[in-house]
Length: 237
Ligand SMILES: C[S@@+](CC[C@H](N)C(=O)[O-])C[C@H]1O[C@@H](n2cnc3c(N)ncnc32)[C@H](O)[C@@H]1O
Image (tube, rainbow, N blue to C red; front, side):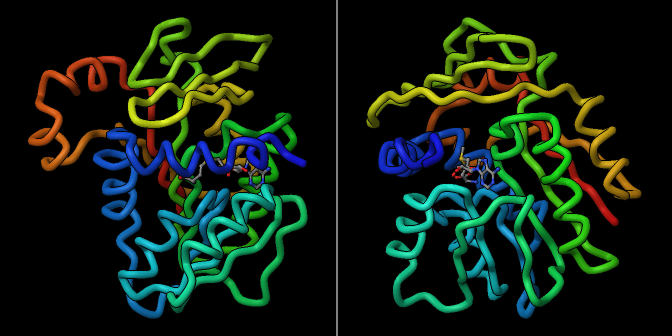
């Protein structure tokens, strides 16, 4: 059993109401990934499959994998009747697939590595699973920018050791829950990507979309833009 088995239902309910997921993470991922018809796309740490379903609706075929059996059960039950989607219980150390992927993404997953070796495995495994021209889009929190101790957009990060932290989610309209995570610097993530073989590395800030600014108001996002601890990492083979 992994920690996301225990919080699968709470996590799934939280992401349905969280403005950061709804108006920043998911729309920007779709822009950066730009999924096309007939592409084969890998969703690493797919959770309940919310993003995989959005990508499949653009016409791509999506394979999602997650270490949590409970998350994969949720992903399968929420995707009944939809085509172009496959969900597997797996981890980067054992993941294999008979075809190579055009693109891969991992949204808020690498920080749940349980060791630096596991972090490296995410990069190594994805490099091997991608086609020669493949792209890997990652969203993560940068250690040097996380506002430890403060409540930031319904998230409170507390350091629990070197490279280790606990994150408590308390998003209005959902049940609070806490999970353990690791914190990695930009330098560490870049060195893992290079070690795996990725040639090109680009960084981009996570920003809210126009709809989010309209619905939540510009004031709501002011600290989000100032704190700026979520970053996209866009890798090419
Ligand atoms: C914060 S959730 C993100 C889910 C989804 N990507 C999203 O943005 O809604 C992190 C997910 O990563 C999965 N995960 C963590 N470590 C993993 C590993 N080593 N292999 C596969 N999945 C992992 C967890 O089980 C969990 O479902």
